[in-house]
Image (tube, rainbow, N blue to C red; front, side, top):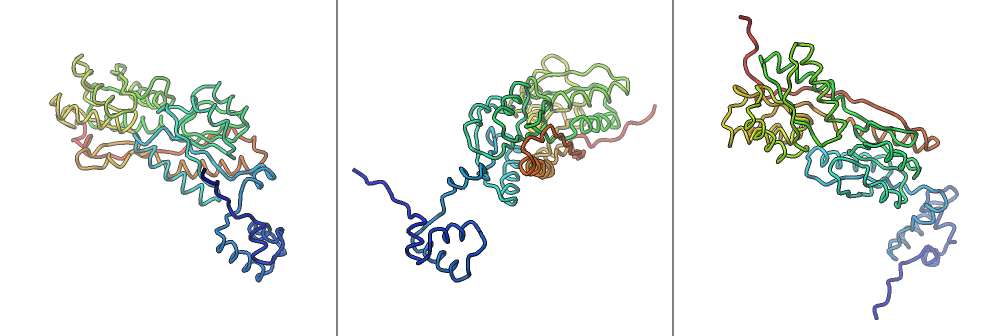
Length: 342
């Protein structure tokens, strides 16, 4: 039979250091009334014994763990990967520890709510949106401040930090018009995606104001493979536009490869392509993709600021919406001569 490991306790540290147990507790909690000599003895004894203070009593006493759950659906999307790193860094800079929670849904936080309710965390942050009112209410029942990206529903416990999807999409449409496009297309993300719908609305409204009503719309499920298949579908149906806007960069990269390797159309001379996010791959020379920068760093900073407000106040001051502007980044996939007058 293997004996269970016994971890050194604060009593062991106190005995070795020759001080009281309360002095050990005050030393590790940064409390007042501990002399420099006592601190030196306590830390030396703790190092010799390999002692680490147990945070559980503090959690039970103060009802605060300093743990923040970061929800991720994986790292297939480079935007989410970069955001995960930024969240972890900023939370640690603000005195919190990150607890990574993996969910199966690639596009929504909704299905993770029952699991999140079982964690003793001070807050939940995620680049995945909350899409349904029921999910937002479930999070409110858990009574844990939640901040997510591009979330259409909010309440006093659920806040959102959004990128200006409509404004970015409008800038893409204006660029296509300036470059002389006549037939327009849009590859949407997943069904029910608020961000994708917002980008389509901004794109469509700008084109409509210029007199273009017909837009070929298909879905690519936010994936490289989906964008590749969507491009093939448009070509097979004879609906390939001269300007194609994708709701994210991964789909746009798939479109570029489909045009290059199977369809045989030149970019940008035959088809101009633009995406959304400005993931690192978009700037690679093999793609050189025109896109809208979704400023993940600024969104993370805004999210952490909101999180601190919600935790330090009365923990039920959500419903906050912060919008971060995007920026059009033009590269080779749209860089052709401007429209000329007859």
